[in-house]
Image (cartoon, rainbow, N blue to C red; front, side, top):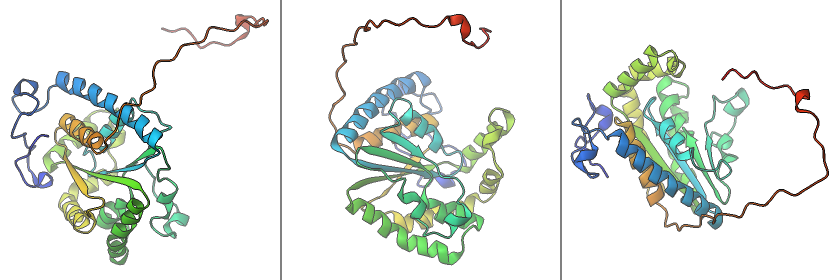
Amino acid sequence: MTEWTNSSPDEADDPVAPSGFPAGEENYTSKGRLKKKYYEAELQRLQEELVKLQYWIHERGLKVLVIFEGRGSAGKGGVIKRITERTSPRIVRVEALPKPTEREQTQWYFQRYINLLPAGGEMVMFDRSWYNRSNVEWVMGFCNDQQHQEFLRSCPEFERMLVRSGMIVLKYWFSVSWAEQRNRFESRNEEPLKRWKLSEMDLEEHRLYTKYSMAKDTTFQYTDIKQAPWYVVPSDDKRTARLNCISHLVSQFDYGDVMPDPVALPEREDFPYVRPPMGEQTFVPARY
C-alpha cells in the first residue's frame, strides 16, 4: 500500500505525493500520480476479485456492511461506482438515504437505518450513514449538542451490537485536502454537466472546512473502536484511493473462488406459433 508522508491529509495545503512507488516507478507520473493504463489494469483485476467475493458472501450467508464517509468530493461515490460496476445488485447494493422526513425526525436516530442492514448473503454499502449526525448535522447546526453527545455515546454500542450479531462492519473515511477539494468544486462549477453536483451544502462545507476537521477528529475519538475501526483513505489522487480502498476491502475476507462454471445454453424449443406482423409495432425513429 502507498505510504503518505504527512500525518493529516485533511490539513494539507496541497496534495501529498506517495513516498514510494510500490507498483513500480514506471507506473507513476513525475508528480507521483498513478498512470491511467496501470490504474485501469489493476481496477479490472480487483473487480474480478470483487465478483469472486460476492459469490463467496452469498454462498456463506455473510452479512457485510461497508460505510463510506468523508467530505464532499472526497471520492466516496467514485469508489462505490467501481465496486458495483461488475457485481450483482441482488448481492451488493448501495443505500444513500435522503434528508429525513418529519416522522423520521421523531424516531430513534438509528431506526431508519435498521431495515437497510444486510441480511445473510448480502453486502450493503452506505454512501454516508448514521455518521451524518456527528459530522454534517453537527457542523451545520441540524442537531443540538445533546443529540450530538448522545450519538457519540450510543454509536459505539450500536456497532458492537451489530458485530456481536454476526455482521461484518467496515468503515472507510475518504480524506481530501482543502486545496484538492477546491479544485474539484471549481471543476464542477466550470462544467455544466457537473454543476448539479455542486450544492449550497457543498459550499458551506468548503467554507467550514476546519470545523469539519474538528467534527471528524471528535467522531474518531469516540467511534474508532476495536470491533469496527475506521480506515482512512487519502484521496487527493482518485485512482490510488480507489485501488487502495478496494484492495483493502477484498483483503478483509479469506474467500475462495466459488464462481459458477460456464453453463450449456439450451437450444430453442419448437412451438406452433405465428407471430403478428412486425409492421403493427411502433418503433423508435432510426436516427443512428
